[in-house]
Each structure stands twice: as structure tokens, then as C-alpha cells.
Image (cartoon, rainbow, N blue to C red; front, side, top):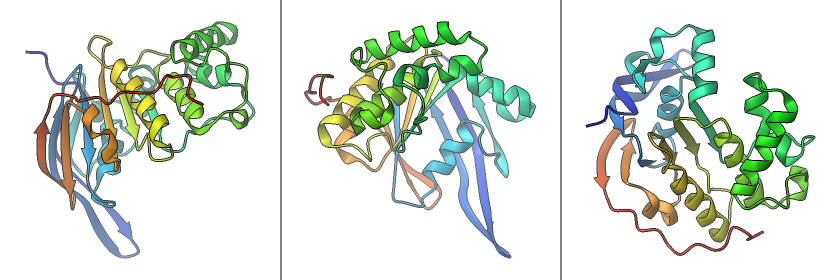
Length: 242
């Protein structure tokens, strides 16, 4: 059996509000597998996004440990952790976080440029990735010239262009209409076909639950259940949808 893509053990995290310490996670244990799309669901404030931030090393736990593809994140220096994230992890957010002054292909190229790839080569890779996601006719447009669904596909292309092992998605469909949300999730589902890749999605959107291999339910900083399922993917509109 393959080792887990993610292994969390005893994760605890609190925040300070004035003199008060507010606990957010209470000893969370979780594993995610290579090749799966794992969804984390639960009410607002239950700790989903905090857990996601610990998994990708944006936050440090107060207690417990996180291991991603065999690497203990607490064993890395700040520089090593930044390099690990830039090479092994891709990020997709509810707010697309595109740079408004860059064209679509240039936005997609940003992770490669940060990694030291020459700008022309990085942009060529950005164009190729956008073509794969059905945006071959939009590569030179600015974000303001794109619909919400198209902007999210640009964000997906940016997250995938450096071929990460782990794809982290925080509410990727919350700002989209139903058709664009289905297109987005179909693309994320397809990205699981890359050998060894794991996709983790935090969502409130019950319309997309069928895309998951497993659904992790959270409440009050704890995991309350894990449901295995066979993905049941609805018929999806063409990626030419605006």
C-alpha cells in the first residue's frame, strides 16, 4: 500500500483575541492518499481553513505534526519550507488572486518564474496549460476581460503549471455559478489522474460533493466523520462555457 500523501497527527491550534486564547483545532488526526480527491466540509468557523493552512505549512501547529509526502514540515527551515511549497504544492482559492496587470498566460507563468524558469519559457508553458484547460483563445487577455469561470480556470492552470504533488483548494467554486463550478470540479477531478497527486478541497458547496473519493466532516475543531464513496460526477458543460 502506498504511504499517505498527507499525515496529520494530534494537530492543535489556538488564536489569541486580546487576553483570550481561542482554540480552533483539538487534536486532529487525518490522512490523505495519493490519487484521491479529498473534501473537507463543515460549518463556518469549524477549523477547515486552519487545518488546510497547517497542511501546507502556512501556519505552524501549537502541538502535533504534519507530514507531506514523507517530509515532516516542522523539520524544514523557513527557506526549505518555502522551496517545498513552491515545488510540491499548488494553491487554488475562492478569490482567484490573479494579478490584474498580467495577461492570462503571464499569470499562469508566475510559479515558474519564481522557480527560476526564464520568462519566455514560463509564458510558453502558461499558454500550453491554458490550452489544456480550454482557454487557448484567451491566453493574452487580462483578468478583467474574463468571466468568473474563466478566471478560475486561469487560477487552476497557475496551480498546476509546475506539476505539484499536492493541490490545495479553498472554496474553489464558492464564487461561481453552477455550470462554471462543475467545469472547475471536473478539471480538478481530472488532475487526480497525474500519478501520485492528491487534491484536497475545502468547501461548503454541496453541489460538488459527488466529485470526492472521501468526505471529511468537521465541527468545532474536530473531525466528526469520514465517508468513503464512489465519485458520481454530474454531466458537465463544455469547457467553452464563458
